Length: 208
Image 1 (tube, rainbow, N blue to C red):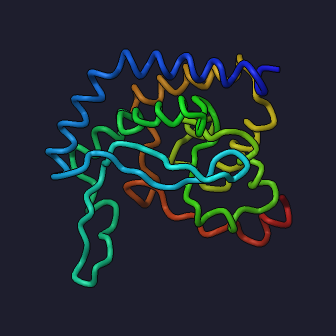
Image 2 (image 1 turned 45 degrees about the horizontal axis):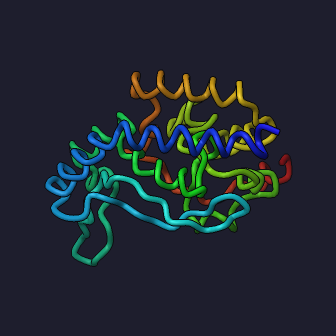
């Protein structure tokens, strides 16, 4: 009952309230971001949501669009500015996603919406992460964030999908506050953000 009805109502009410209360912060970040990024402070990208339906995700930009002499984007660590590191470490870059939640594209809690190009790479178990709306935060985000492997992250996503409860969502939200305050799991062990997902190994596909 909660997952099918009340969760959406709670998402809408809480996100609308948060958007109103945090609007001064969002306006300041938009102005500062426009100055720091020398242009549009917002980052938008098409992502897959519930049932793999595509929607346009909106965040604050944390990286520049600098390219090398061949026209290719520089590595994340080269484009991630001090301002970008700050809004990422504090999760302030995620605030515009409140609009996505109000629209119904996302939920407060759920698997994070990833890149469209990953869709064909998921195994049958991993695909179930799209059985619910993607979230602003999720079980994987409070259990390692970018510091855990893709396989572990997807395992946690599916675990959440199979056990959506109000008490579980409340616990994840509380744990998210702790993670943000501690600024933990922002980077992976080898990257300033998170390495690209290239699919699970055959052994893991068989075990799944």
